[in-house]
Length: 213
Image (cartoon, rainbow, N blue to C red; front, side, top):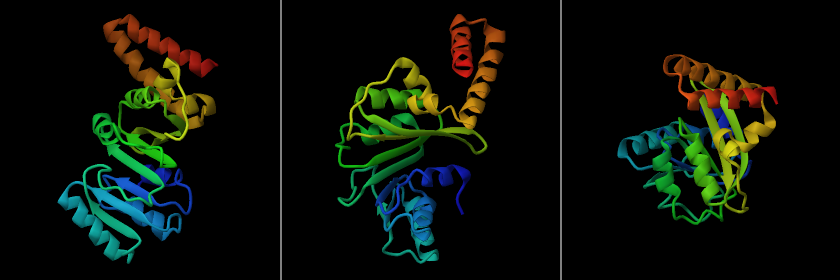
């Protein structure tokens, strides 16, 4: 039912919490969370009528009316008062920045974000607002994805290295994170062979130092 990417996101959601899934599309994640008794209620939000209608179809298909609630809205503009956790997956950084900027996020236990690139920009956004990164994961599902979980309930500042590679990822150094770093290093080495760019070489050495630490 779920892609590996969405399945890993589901593992970051605490049980018995109400979730607001932004850009929910087919509402596959919300349906999974309720069907597997992880969450009592999930809002499946999208700003386009096509995905909104597909969400309704899946809610009916799995007989989850009243437990998975379709919402036609922009971002979190129409978020409900009982929400504990926000998930935003598969969007670009600047879209996510637009969704979150200027919002009071202190009432939520977690904001779980998965973007396809620009994770450094995401963590820089988190750092500038002094939000707290709770958890991070790297998964591979055709591509490498970083999952970032943060909260506005606590304050924290991060170093440039932590912003670039992830404070929790650097601490845990999971097998998948090591594979991801080697993948990044291989790509950078290909670029360096063509360009001889010193900035690229510096980044290769930076990754080496993390791998050898």
